[in-house]
Image (cartoon, rainbow, N blue to C red; front, top):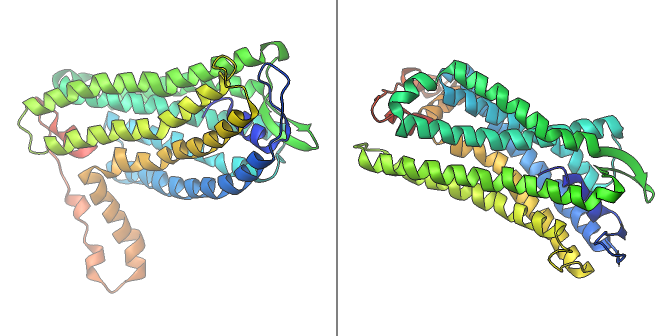
Length: 357
C-alpha cells in the first residue's frame, strides 16, 4: 500500500473518466458495487485479527520478555507499525462503502499513518532479517553489535526514514467534493500527474518488494548454509521457518505490487482500454486485501513460532483469562513460562534459532 492507495478506492467508487493519456469515458458502476460489498467486511476481519495478534505481541514482549534483546526491540516495533497500519483501516472501509466524511485534516493524518505503518513494517522486516543473519552467521561479532541500545538506535532511524517516505502521501492527499461526493485521494499537479503516479509506484515496488526480497534471499542463503554446517538439533525446523518467511512475504505482497505496476503503466504497455482497466481495478481490490492480511500473519511467523513465546502466551491466558473462567481448576495456575530458560551458544547462535525464530 502506497501513496496511490486512496486513488484506487476513488477510481473504484466514482463514475468518471479514467485518464489513460487519452479521453476514454469509462464507467465505474460495477467496480463501485464490487468495492462496496467486498472491502468493508474483509477490512473488518483484518482489523479484528490484526489488533488481537499484534496487541498480544506487544503485551508478551513488554510484560514477559521485557525487551532484553535486539530481536525483541524489532519485534515490538514491527507490531507497533502493524497496529499503526491497522488503525486506519476502519476509516478506509467506511470510505469504500460510502464516501469520505472525516474532513481534510483527518484525510492527511490517516493517509500518513497508513503509509507510515506500511513503510516502517517493511523496514523492520528487513532489520529482523539482518538481525538473524548476524546472530547465526556472525555470532561472535553479534555479541557486540546486537545490543538493546543499538536496537533502539536502529529503530529510531528506521521510523525517521519511514516518515520521510510517507510525507508525499500527506502532502498530496486532500479531501474535496467530486461528482456529488466527498473523496480523500492524492491530487498531483495536472501536468505531472502520470509522472508522479509512476514514480511512486516504482518506489513502492523497489522498497516494498525488490529490496526486501534481495536482502532476504542473500541473508537466508547464508543462514541456511551456516545451519546445515553446525550441529543443531533444531536446524531443520529453523530452515523450514526461514523458507516460510520468504514464501509468505512474497505470496502476500508480490500480486499487489505487480498489479499496481500494470495499472499505472497501462499506456506504456498498451493496456489502456476500459475493459482491462476494470479488470485491473478489481484485481487491485483482491490483491490489496491479501497484502493487508500479512500484518495479521506477522505475529505468527515472527513471534508465536518461538517456543518461549508460546509459553509466555500460555502463561498469560492461564493467569488472566482461564483463571477467571474456571477459578476452581488448579491447572490454570501452573506457570511453566516463569521457569522457561534458554542457553546461548556463542559459536552458533542457537538461542536465536530456537527462541527468537
